[in-house]
Amino acid sequence: MVDGVVGTNTGGEPESSDSLRTFGAVVQGLREHAGLSREEFGELVRFSKHTVASVELGRRMPDAEFVQRAEEVFGRTGALQRAAGCLERQPGLAAWFRRWARLEQVAITLYTYECRLIPGLLQTEAYARTLFTNQLPPLDDEQIEAQWAARAERQRLLRGRPNTAFSFLLEEHLFRRRMGGVEVTRELIDHVLDLAQLRNIELQIMPTEQETHAGLDGSMQLLETPENRWFAYCEAQRGGLFMSDPKELSVLQRRYARMRSQALTLTDSVGLLQQMRGEL
Image (tube, rainbow, N blue to C red):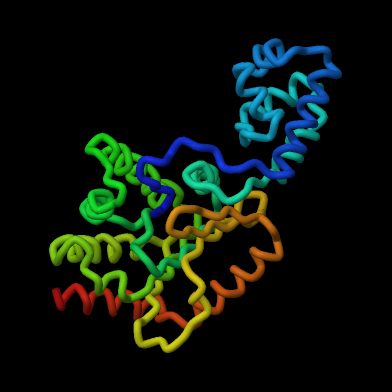
């Protein structure tokens, strides 16, 4: 799994959680108190009765539109809106990443540490297609095109949100690997150097010769919303973990801060990339 790409397994919703089931029970209680059937309520919020049932049973993360329209039906108390901000689910696959991707659209701060592959936001098309064509189980041509289209759309964030602060901490060996060959790597380094010139992007390289650092437990992403609420997302081989627990976030924030002091400076990081580019 790389930046939410999970091959052919992209449909399932993650396992439910207590907060989802609680939220759903509240919606059901309010609906029944209002004397509405699921079908009648669905017509008012412009969602199907099946979607209403999935939300009430805690199987589905409610869309923002669902919450807003439900608030209007139930008298605009603000209770559902506040409760929706506390929703969590168990670790899942693509559905978790879809929620993360939605948060990226509004984030005012986005931190990324990567030790496996160049992050999706920084990938070139050639680099991304190298990853897609080498996935197991294999993707067909239509799936590869869909994956690249989604990734290219996400990448518009970097230039489309100039007031969002992006920080990337990347391991040196990600460029040394020469994924896809020399030409792909040369284009990749040129692309990353170009992005590093943007005022809202900070790029630091963790040198291979750094004997130890605070990120040895693996890759991580952290973001801050306009409401100054923080979330984190971490990936493994076949799953992703979305986190909102302040205690867990505090640990990751401290680790990221330590890594920034252990990595090369912004200027030295650019210098190392230029050096590697010249060696190709």
